[in-house]
Image 1 (tube, rainbow, N blue to C red):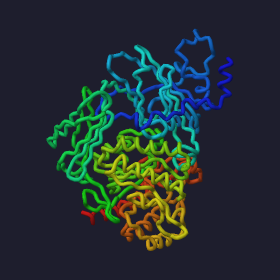
Image 2 (tube, rainbow, N blue to C red):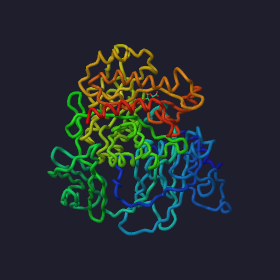
Image 3 (cartoon, helix red, strand yellow):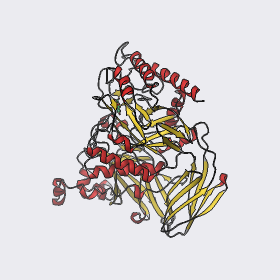
Image 4 (cartoon, rainbow, N blue to C red):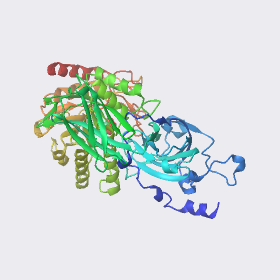
Length: 587
Ligand code: GCB
């Protein structure tokens, strides 16, 4: 090995220059309604457990045919294995099933320069951190496995053939969000779409459109010299100029749109034009608020008939297709739902668009899950950034009614400060939605009690009476002991049921027992008038490393439907009957 290579191999700081987190919510560009060039398809791929690529600077290897090379290469970015993008490597080869570490993706990119145009790459999601290189130059790093990010390529692109490389690392560490321990599978890879946008010099960076009282409020952010933008909502007769000062514009327009609701998911075409740039969106207008223990949609109290759902597929892993989202939502509708909890991280952005069209309300969430490193400022920055990226991505979606800032986090001072900060941030980024977090019961006092409760709008409550907690009577006692001043949504409850031939007839893990837990839960929860909704755990069985019992076999089997996404368990029908009854009362 050359001296410098040897030194690099021993240098434990080899990754420090790359840990910048410079690709974040501030570099995101609004892309709805834009036509981009898809970079999906086969990319050259190599797993790299020892981070040799960062140490040896694989990204700096310029293409040479093997015969012309003067040094031996430990990775060949230009020949060899490929994987499709989007995909999770676990699902590509059995030997990659438990792989955790860095992996390299490379593909060529042909560029024809045009003066005054900007090229921006957008990656829908990569689990967990992603370093971007173009022609050997490091362009940036993104943390967070489920939110999109953008990187500008303009300066680094050359005429003709270019090489784009991504180093994606899914290692679980204590400082990440989530940290080392979760109850869902740690998939890895570039598992959402990658797109290249060719943009004019003036670029619309952000557009936020919402109902505020009797008016529509529009805020926009534009990069580049531009005095005003043109806003169009043709169906409402809106065609107005939005003045821009230092790239920012804000306008409140009196309007009475037809309100969006699950019964009437009305959407309006919206477009904004600035210079040569234009974005378009389909936006629903509605209000969501709370008063005491009520949740109000357009001023009317409602009960959230929900179900929780992960992004997981037996053959695709975390890759989500339009078909998959539509199947999820069709099953939720069949169950009688008007609401879904998209757990435990931001789901594919098509989900909220389709929910807008179908009239389903959504809880969206960031993976502040269990015992995050709450006292660590870098962890906090990461969580805040993921929340901002999620909100900026989805805040024009009428279906999204709740931003949830965490799940089952121990009630410590550091956690309170961290999560209160996230709840405040959600309100700053978007004051038009409710905040929540999945909290825990105080098992000693048998009471709903969480210091975070006063800083969020809805108390989410995960409780597993009949499953992890055996004594069901305690749930009745909790009901009696608690008098929350705001709405409670049962964000999780449930039990495993193994629907395969190996499933037991009776007792834990049997379908009959799962059904019995649902029957008891429903009987108890229906008597608590401050419970304004529920999203039991969970629609489909899902894959997870930590569950290896004889009935689990690598899966969490709390689904109302099995992992084949077809076999309904008896508890499905139990919950459907309850929701049908509730819906009948409401109408
Ligand atoms: C929980 C977690 C969820 C788990 C579930 C379970 O409380 O929030 O992520 O999958 O329980 O099945 O234990």
